[in-house]
Image 1 (spheres, rainbow, N blue to C red):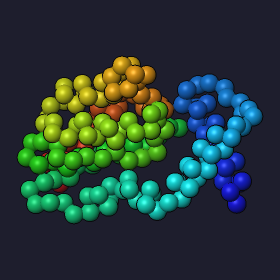
Image 2: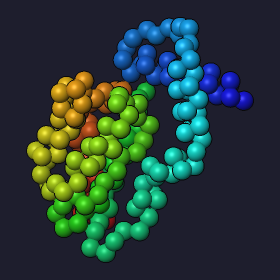
Image 3: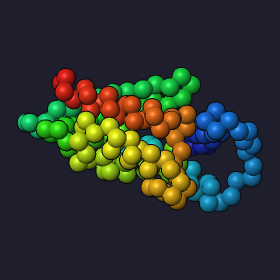
Image 4: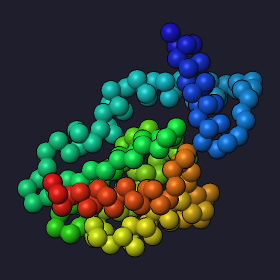
Length: 170
C-alpha cells in the first residue's frame, strides 16, 4: 500500500543522497509538510500524464520533414542514466529533450537547459559548453547552481554534442 511505497521512496532517496554526495544521512522525525511532499510526489509518480510527459518517443514520434533526430546516452556506473535527443533543422537545434534517471537539484534544471540550447548551432560546441557551464555555476541559471548526482559538466556537454553529431547520421 501507500505506507510501503513511502518507505521504499524514503529508502531509495536516502541511499541516493549518500551515494551521490558522499554523505551520511539519518532519517529523523517527519514533519507534516514532509508527509505532504511525499504524498504529492507519490501521486505524481503514479500519474500516466506525468510519466509520459517526459517521453522522447512520444515527443519525437513524428519527425517533421527537413529535420533529423540525433540520440546519445550515457550510463554512469552506480549513477544515473541520461539520454539526450536533439532535433536538428539545417544546422540549428530546433528542439531537444533529456530523459533518464537523474536526481538533480533543482528538479527542472535540464528542462530549462533544453530551452536555452534551442536555436544554437549544432556544431557550436563552445556555445553548448557555455550554456551547460552557466547551468551548473552558482549564480548562473540558479543562485545556488545545479547539482546532478554523479554527472559532471563535461559529461553533459559530451552527450549533447554526441546527439548533435548523430543527427547527421539519421
